[in-house]
Image (cartoon, rainbow, N blue to C red; front, side, top):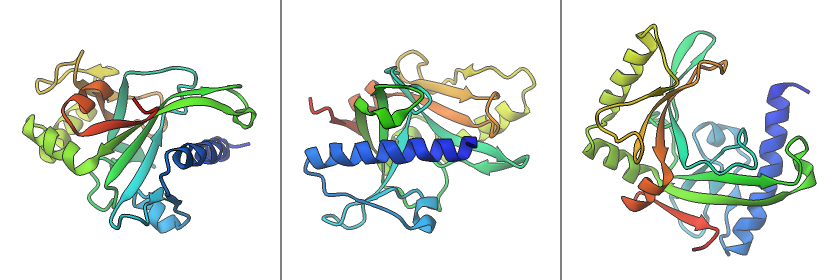
Length: 205
């Protein structure tokens, strides 16, 4: 099985589990099957509230771990050409990110064996971008950091920036080991909740 098909299968199995979680929360989401809408950052629709477009982002590469951070994509490479990442891409319809972290499973190599638990954090995309701008991290500033990091020969995984405290807020994260070599803004989930741009919706606190 190709990496793409395996990843798609993992996402499908996780989606089925998440649907049971949403049902338990009485959240009547509809899973979007329209590929063109998926491409514009829409995994879930909320018929009860018009204009809500949710993009699920899951840490499926970190099963049975609970990381305190999440990475938001600034740019990536496709066939050697640089593309704008989903955080800054204004063609995306996304209003909210559902960040799926702390994914605990029965068997890491066979997700069909079942899921035990996860944490879902809802991030308001507009509020996040406004908050970043208030910190001096406008779209242009982030793209400048992105360009500087791509041009810099001695790239590191973790790159501190003056606008964010690296231990409590965030930093830039570069992943050269991945084919797409994404540059991400890695942010602390606790901090996003504290500043009011995110809230944990599952498990309920």
